[in-house]
Image (cartoon, rainbow, N blue to C red):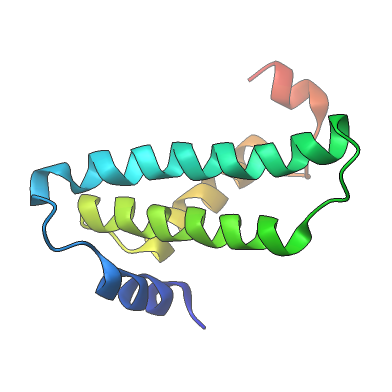
Length: 106
């Protein structure tokens, strides 16, 4: 599946009752809450003796993807545009791959 196809399909489930000017707020709040759920799964594995629940983590990553698509929709851009822009930024920052020094001194 192409990323813009995902965005289009995901946005068919957007809550139509959310006022247009509040969609971005909902998206960013959703990104934060779903990211919190993802880190909670990892925390349980690292500090509470749980096995890593990969199925649950993948589900939460899917929820994060949905809210990212909603944020892009609110901004009027395609996810592809966001992804391409991010790769361009990373290529400039780390042209030869990740280097700790370039991360610290940017």
